[in-house]
Length: 327
Image (tube, rainbow, N blue to C red; front, side, top):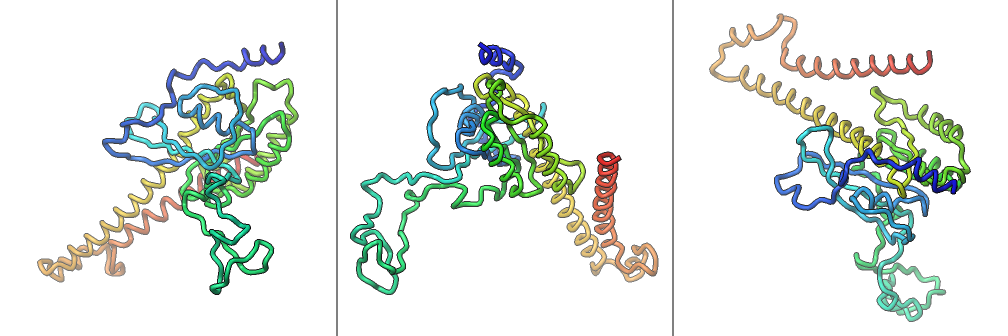
């Protein structure tokens, strides 16, 4: 009875219908932004259920083991912008299951299917000879042990079960290895079972605060860990996840704009050099282009002004943020 009441209390009806949609012909006109989000967590924390929910699918009660990393693209919009944004969602497993059928796997008993060094003949698995299994691409399970899942990643959704303390221990351990520049959303899943929770909110917030002290490297603090409790059963928290995607998106957009600014500044310097070195410009006219006689190359100053302005302006904001945190 208590759980049923919790389900009703957690019911989230504010999320519009079909907010998350699988991609169909959306990208036919091209993609302006390509964003990668990965979902991580211990087993049975609801990763695959969230993966399915983000694609617009319903909640499924039965548990099915995910054999290896799964990837899907979803539609997503930031506010009312018309930008075409491709969000690539990864459902990450720590250790995958070899997808090759048993009757196609290498036979270790007779040495077949094995690559043996130094032209040695077939040997048994107990032989000390150096053996390496020769697997085709379809025999390799894609998991966090075989590839760097954080490569080219813009945001991480890290899940744990609020009723199982060891899943929280896993999450805290993983928080410490996620690259510091990435934004992280920590999800306390199974909120509909709050009466059975084994991890208090104070424990969660204290652990997050300890990790965030190590991650305060810039302002605005987009890389700080954020926490919300969810229920894949009722859909509670899905709207928050939808809004959270705006953080890695704005970071991606900011990085692209910074790169464009640097590129255009260099192009401007190059163009000014080209014009000043033109044979159509007299030496006297070339001299008049200088700011003073002491400044021989004023064009390059433009580049450094842009660089130092953005550098020290962000530093000023960062110091201001630190003062607000500690005073």
